[in-house]
Each structure stands twice: as structure tokens, then as C-alpha cells.
Image 1 (cartoon, rainbow, N blue to C red):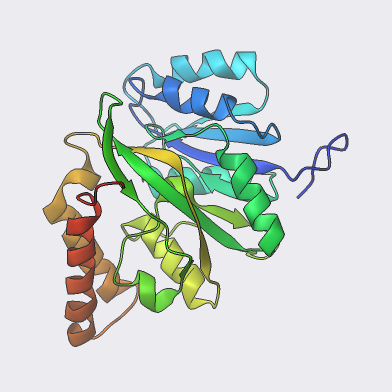
Image 2 (image 1 turned 180 degrees about the horizontal axis):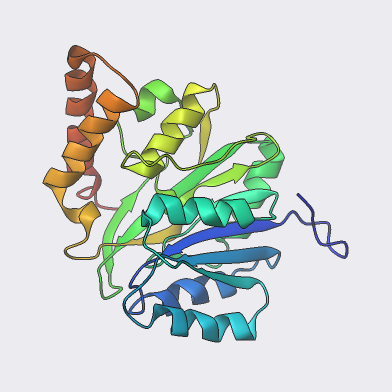
Length: 259
């Protein structure tokens, strides 16, 4: 990993998978361009979109050399697209941002400072929910101070759009194909002995897109149950115990009004 020779700030690689995102990708890219922290690269991997996403992204690539586009010739899914981006990343830190979500302007600045002060390998932040149209829903998910493996396995508190990882402390960063792939990665890292540290400030907006896979509660629950069995290889008794905790937290997460 290398920083810009003219700048001592660590480089942050923003990992963005894109698929049929032309309705939202402009806002997503603009939220990165608006960051108060300037030393970043944004790697957008388009997963064989059928709309004009690539055209929209190319306009930004032409305007700012920090934005890079990798168009895929076949659809490989979000996990695969993220891994392609990670393989091309040059940053000291890896940060994740999906193509319909948004960052607040000080997100990178505050989180890099948080990581450096604590010499943290893994951090995440609080975030708010917005509607598909971008309206704030007065709901926020508050980051707990510390999350370990036992805490996360029965919870869904870490939002992918808020995560930042230190590549010097975490040598191998790769999203498993097992869904939900982001949670599968977090569990893998925590099982290795890392802890995730929460920056308890809302620094991102998660967009609730109607008819998306993540909004199908039955499918999401089934994917999580399979994750506990296939990747974590838990007994049925433990699966049922942690799954009940997951279901409880997942149900309440989107119903906790911000104070």
C-alpha cells in the first residue's frame, strides 16, 4: 500500500459494486466527491448492468481521476464485484459503499481519525435510513462501542456502507460467496480475533429500495439461517438460538426512532 508522495494522509479505497443503479449512482458518487477528506480512490465495478449505469459512471471517471470504473463482461454478483475492486485497490484502508447508499461529508475524515487514534483494524459507524426517494425516515441504527464474534452472530448491527478496514492489520480481505456476504466477512474477521469498534455518530444513509433482495424479509432470514449452518457450522440448537436473536434485532432495527 502506498500513499501519495505529496500527501502523508493514508489512502482510502472506496469499494462500490454497481448493478442497474443509474437511478442512484449519481448521488452515491457525489457523496464521495463531497468528502472533506480528499485522499481516496473510488473503484466502481459494474456487474454487467442492463441500464445506462456505465455511461453515467464514465462521466465521473472523465472528470476525476480518483474514480475508476471496471465493467465486467458477465454478471458475478455483489460479492464477486466487491472482490474484483478489492484486488485492484491501492489504499491503506478499505471502505465499502453500495451504489444506492450515501455518505455524509465528514464520514471519511472522522473515521480515518478514529481508526488512527485507536490503531484499529476494523471500524464502523452509526447510520440513518432513507426512503428510495431519498427522504429521511427518522430512523437510525446506532453503532455499539465494541462488537465481537458472539455479539454479531445474533445481530445485524454492522452496516456495510459504514465499514472501514486497515489492510496492514487485516492481510486478507475477501467477501465470501455465502450470503449475506458482508456479514459472512465480518464474522470471519471477528472469528480470527479482531474486534469491530463503533464510531457512535451517524455518518451514512442507507437507502431502502423497494423490491430489493435485502428487503425481502423471508429470503433475508433464510440466507442468514443458511449462513449459520454452512459457514459457521453451528448445531441446530445454536442456530435456532442465534437465529431467534437475529430475527428479534432485525425486526426492531428499522423501528427504533432516532432520539
